[in-house]
Image 1 (cartoon, helix red, strand yellow):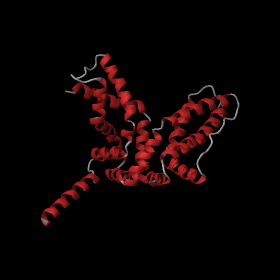
Image 2 (cartoon, one colour):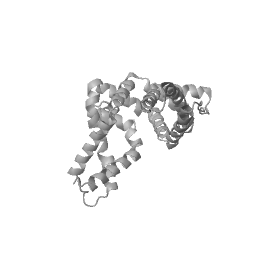
Image 3 (cartoon, rainbow, N blue to C red):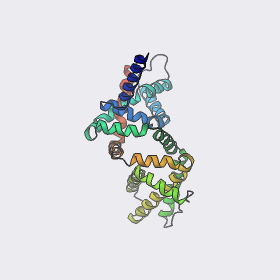
Image 4 (spheres, helix red, strand yellow):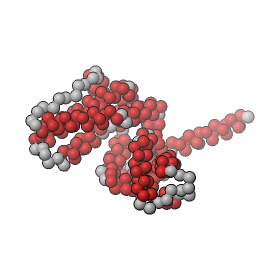
Length: 273
């Protein structure tokens, strides 16, 4: 009986070690994209996109739905059973160029802790809040009119305490949100030919400040101080910064990345039985 218990403990230990020490880029990224929750968080949006793509394929005669399937059911099956594999396959070459399996595993371990999973769940809820995008769109619309007519746009009112504001600012910068939104704002303003250089500079400064406040105010509904502190610790690691840069670089060509996934989806559809 004692030997049996020892053997059981050994098997469980080996299983646990196998879950931690992924030995290939595919295994390591599969676990990383599982524990960080990104694919799950965007499932609704992806389901809409794949439904549109499938309807186009069917209408164009490129694929025929398998017997017994609807567009919705085939999309649901792909997202639940195959999407992550294809997502990982597209990313593997990029990660293999500039990071190690050990670095990916270390980051996954931080996400996989109870505190990391709880914080990640709350951060995903925050980033998925549709009112944030609505508030940003309304802000951009009104501020664009004000700046274009020489007026000073009205700032968003901060609802959080100074302590919470400071803590959220640490998270906002550490997680790369400030840079990501700054790059997005710069790209959008560069394409606007109706504003002068001075007006674009004023708009960039205004949006950078107020986008953060919109997120800050919304964060009160979803995240605790402990969540933010956990995420600051996670996003401050060199592993996170390296992985974040890889993903950011890949998505600079979002159209090309999306096409890679669509091609894999098309192949899966055509070979589906």
